[in-house]
Picture 1 (cartoon, helix red, strand yellow):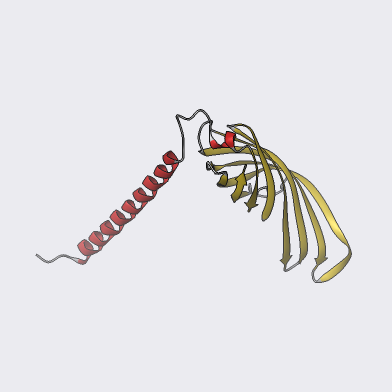
Picture 2 (cartoon, rainbow, N blue to C red):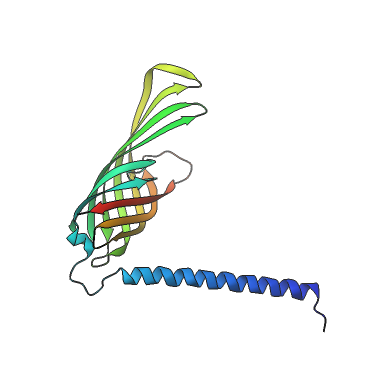
Length: 194
C-alpha cells in the first residue's frame, strides 16, 4: 500500500505533537516535583520563619520600575514579607541621557508553611527621572520629574532552609504610570535571608 503525501504530512505532524506533549508533561512533572519536595506541608513553620531578615537583588522590577534594585526584606510572620528597596536605571537613548531612580516599599503575601509559595504583592514606589541631555545637547541643569507608582505583583517565592531566596513573577503597574496600556514587567529576585 502506498501512502499519499497528505498521510505522510499528517503522520509527521502527529509525531511532532506527541513529542511536544511529552516534553510539556515532563516539564510539568518536574515543576510539581520541585514544588512538593521543597514545600513542607506538615511542618510547624516555614523557612521564612527561621530566616526572617535578609536582602535580595531585584532584576527588572523590584522596586518597580527599575532595571536593578537592592532590597531588604523582613518576615514578621511566615505568610508576610515587608520590603524596602532602592533601584536605579541609567539610559542612553537616541533622544538623550536619563537617570531613573526608584525608592520603594511593599508587602508580599505567601502561603503559610510553604517554602516554595505563590506570591501576591502590593508595592508603592517613588520614581524619579533626571534628564541630563536631550537631542545631543547637554542641559546646563538637568530636567527632573518624580511620580508615585503603585504596582501589584504575582509570582512565586522560594526560601531554602539555609536562607537562599529565589523569586520570580510579574509586576503590574496599577497607577502613576501614564500609558495607553497597563505595563506588565517580569521580575527575578535572588537573595539571602538569615
